[in-house]
Length: 150
Image 1 (cartoon, helix red, strand yellow):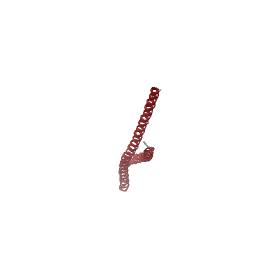
Image 2 (cartoon, rainbow, N blue to C red):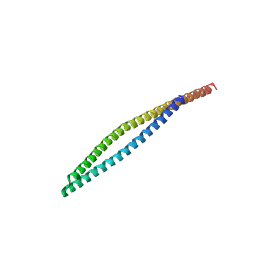
Image 3 (cartoon, rainbow, N blue to C red):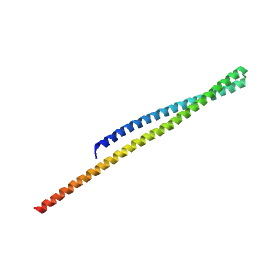
Image 4 (tube, rainbow, N blue to C red):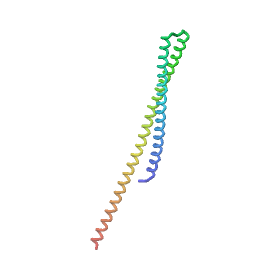
């Protein structure tokens, strides 16, 4: 066997390795973003709970209709922000799912090229062993002929 297919396969392995590393890096970035967005959601939810608690305290002490409307408007804005953050989390989770599949596909491709190289190397070794065995057999046959001729 020639080394040219092996060189081509090595190039494919290098390209697949680069693609796998890039996909893993992107997946890591998305996982970091997910953690950041989860932290933002937790902060919004905590702030929302605190604000509702403050509202309850103010209601017990008494609020003017204008103050109550302001609290309600702000709580509504917080709930809108929480819903938007939850939607964003879903989008990032979906991106992670897609990127994980991409990364797995890259890994599969890389592994398949490595398997092809291993098979090629094994075939080359078998071919080499067979060639060496033939040479040994020819040498032994010549030696036997020389001994019988003497």
